[in-house]
Length: 193
Image 1 (cartoon, helix red, strand yellow):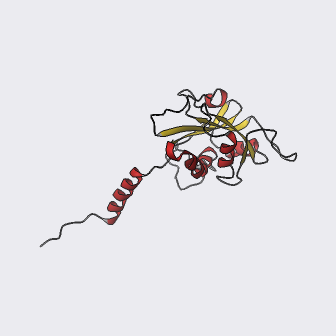
Image 2: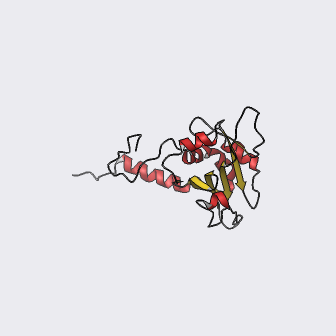
Image 3: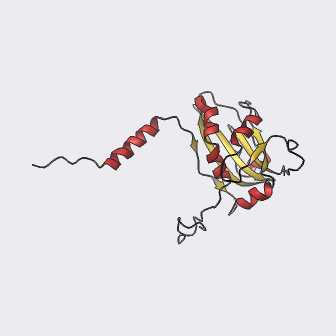
């Protein structure tokens, strides 16, 4: 007499986890885009006093720019950045370079990506029929994009998800290392790849 074969616990756990996540209202932060091979020098040069300007474009003015600055400040890899909305809002011994900034666009137009995010960011307003709010984040050096990512937040939990995903946004905009995916001999376990 043979016993029926039961699925392995790891398979059952994986299926259960997928089912659980499918029902959750989680924010989705997409894979970032990098226009450079490393971002750390741009972060250091762009924010010598660890202060960076944040520019918010939101047609509906969902949240004040100060909310975005406060929510995204002091997250990510050390040294962490403090964001300000006004370049004159720094102490006398602090340096800010307004050309280096983070741009946040709520409900961006289709053309608001890459360098356009730095030169002409446009918000089209929220779609009331959608349960998601799309936000595009970019780290700009003048008119050039350095890094960029996009997040989809649940409309009902928009404010809480901005705050709970601030680390992820900062990690993606300012990674310590960029993996060289074009080198097929480069191991993902090496820091230099």
